[in-house]
Image (tube, rainbow, N blue to C red; front, top):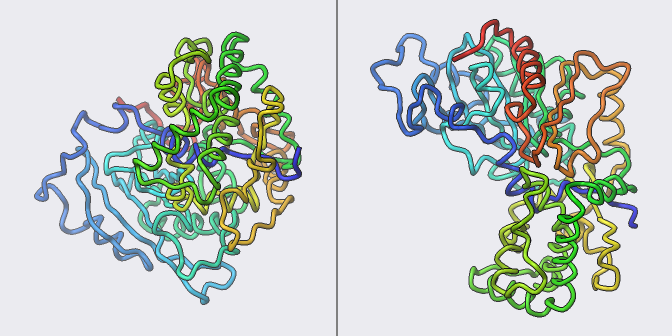
Length: 464
């Protein structure tokens, strides 16, 4: 096993994990039953105290445009000027992209981050806590993701403290408008960012909800993930996955690598960074169990896994449906460089042991982050960053709510509370993968978690 081993599966995080964890249900995405493209009539907006004008008056804030929004809301695309280095704010700045869903300045405000960019969101998106407290929401694009990247790019200024300071500075600015209770939330990498922000600025918000957030304390040891994958689901399901892995890296390898190469060529994708279609195949097949269980909703719903003797079309189609193949291409890697950089410098990454594939692996070290990050960008791992976060949660963390999915490999190393934790709660959603939410908890846990969140937000009565 290598000395730099832990991952949030960045390739999947750029797709499923970035968007699915806090994806709104129909009820929360379309409050009042309105279609998301239904804008409020201009005549109904108050002219004397217009929220657009108030937001635009916040120093450093710029309103890019107003978007269509559900009934009862207004939606704005914003950018907020942040320093590249919060320790030296006079040495350059960049515009951080935001999305505001405004309900009322009298309602709570939810700060949401998916840990990545905002390209997938629309004007109707509400994270689950926003729906529960019937609040406003400010969605934040993480620094160095999407368009929120300084030019030129000094990668040394991408770390968890700088990103937490972005959130802190934004909250302080918007509290001049939204004076009610603030809640922070995010899923997967966004859930981790939510905890990191609280560690450095514990009093910015009244409470935080972190979904499916792994807790790395020793990047040299991935045995927790290995053990989880050896126990999750049924023996029959695990055996079926192993059989597919062995077929794809054994007798069917040349066939599958050829199909992957032809698919990539047809889509205009290349694998120069990873090295070849064969290397991309090995990497995706190695991580196939992680991809598979993160997406599961039922532990024994494994009938769709093909047999090793399946036709090439059936085997490849199933494989492509589980793995996020575009994310392994040069185009996908380029758009997520910031994620891989964070994994290789502070967050850590997984290198699965995969004894079931002994003798079939051709590329030692393939799972390390240097596979994804251009060599022109330095990677120096900081082993103290994550243990510091873990100690804070156990010794000082307060008003924290963690939600995990029973089938999710991310809970192999979960956050845990300690003797110093106060008003901190951990819940497990049964029969759920990485898309865990409060609404998926067992009824008693769901009621308790909802009550905690509403108490933090100072919301007395349930919404319809």
